[in-house]
Image 1 (cartoon, one colour):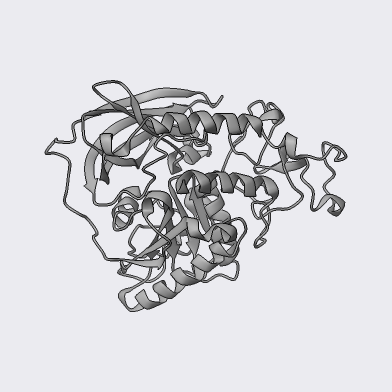
Image 2: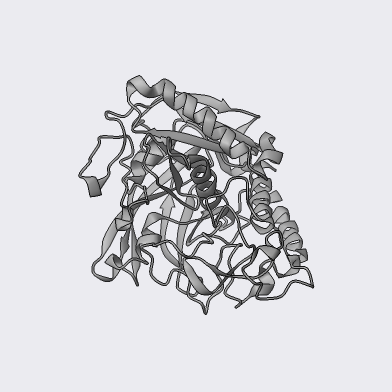
Length: 422
C-alpha cells in the first residue's frame, strides 16, 4: 500500500504539470486504425481521423496511473516532446491472439483511440506488450489538428438522455449505454432498462458508496431489427453495432468486432466507459478493459452479468473462475505475474494483496467455507485450477453472485473511481 501511495503522489505531481487548457480543447480527437496479426505477431495501419463533439474524460488526470491492459497510447506535444496524455487499454484482437484460430492465419480488427482534441501538432505513439508484459513501440503518427482531412461529419448521430447525472463529466465516471437490438417501438423499453441497470450497478459496493462519482447516459438509437446474432441457431439480425453470440465460438460470449460503429454511437454523449445493452433473453455478455462492455437485458442473471462485466471493462479485474470453458489458450503464463490486481502466479506477490492477508491465514489458503470472509491465497482462477491464485473464497468475479466483490476487487475499483473523479 505504501508503494501505491508514493506512486500516486508522483503521478499527481506529474499530472499537475499538464494544464488541460494549454494543450487541449474540450472535444475529442479519434484515431481509427487496423490491428492485424496472428498468435505471435501484430502490426498497426492507419485508417482515419475524426473529430467528435464531447470530451468525457478527466481534465486533471491526463496521464494513466495504472499499468493495466495489453496496449498503451501516448500523446506528445510535437514541439517539446512532452507527454501530455496517455491511456492503457485492451482490445478484442488481444483476446483473439490467445485462441486456436490465431495459430492458423492472420486477421485484422478495427480499433481506435480517443483523447482530448489537441491545440498544437502532436506525435501519437502506440505500444503493445509482449508475453512478458513488456511494452514495445509498434506505430507512431504525427497529427496536425488543423489538418482538413480530420473528418467532422457525424455518422449515426442520435440524441442522448441522462439516465443518472451527478455533475460535470470532467470529474465523473461517465458511462454511455448503447442500445443493441431495440427497435423504434422499443425505445421506451430501452430507457426503462437503462434505469434498471443503473440501479444494478449503483446498488453494488463499492459503487453504492460512490454514486456521486457517476454520470450515466443513454443513446436513443433504434436498431432495424430486434435482438442480436446467434450464429449457432442461424439467427442474424440488423442491429446498431453488430453484436453476436458465439464470439470465438463460445456460445455465451456476446461481443462485436465492429468497433467503428461502437465509437460512432458512443460519440453522441461524453463518456469514459462504453456499455452495450443487448435486447435479448439469452445468457451472455463480455467486456474488455477500456474498450467496451456487453450485457443482455432480460436474462435472470442480467444483474450479475452487468456488474461482473463492468469489473473487467472499468477496473481490469480478471475472471476468478476456473471451471467454465473458454476459447483462450495459456491466457496467463504461470512464469509471469498477471497485470490484473486480483490474480497472482506468485512471481511477484509482493506487488499484489499480500499485505492485506492476516498473519494467521495459511498460504495457500484452503478452498473451504471456514475462510469464506477472509483475504487469502486461494488456488484457482484465470480459467485454470492450478498455479494461479485469487484473493478470496468467493467474489462477483468468480461466481454468479450479486454485491459480492472481495476486498481486493473493491480496493481496485475504488482506486479507479478516484482517478476519474478527482
